[in-house]
Amino acid sequence: MTTQQHTPPPGPAPIPPGFVALADSGGPYMHHIGPLYRLRQGDLVKFGFRVERRHVNPLDILHGGMMASFCDMLLPLSVHDKSAEVADRFLPTISLQIDYLAAVPLGAWVEGQAQPLRVTRSLVFAQGLVSADGIPCARTSGVFKIGSALSGLVAQ
Image 1: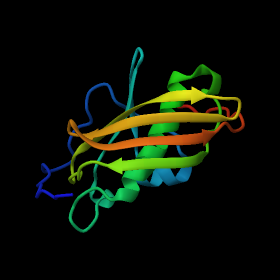
Image 2: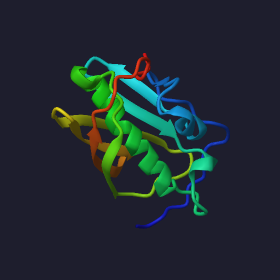
Image 3: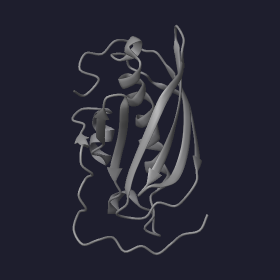
């Protein structure tokens, strides 16, 4: 993987139009490293975040752990929006795979789309693609356990 020098614009860059901050998704951990944003227009659902200084490694590129956290939220939250049968269920991760495709610089806008592949009686299989400023940077898939119903789980 090659790295590129990138100087972010001064001050925080704006969030793209249509994206709204998620209030309570992911609990205290995601509150600490977020916020995450969602865009929902009909069947189109995207999640995203702006890469901040706290998200990068010493080379000023997104830390792999932050990308993993984002993917671990992207998949189940997308399933909540796209599968009514598990929309209000907790989906703890059983397995998460990530292919890191490109380095993501400080200041970049990261967004992803995902879809459920299969929903069984007890499991959900999902996949997604993540881009940074329009460049594919991660491919992800996962298996999630269909957990208990949680009121207020999905942000409005």
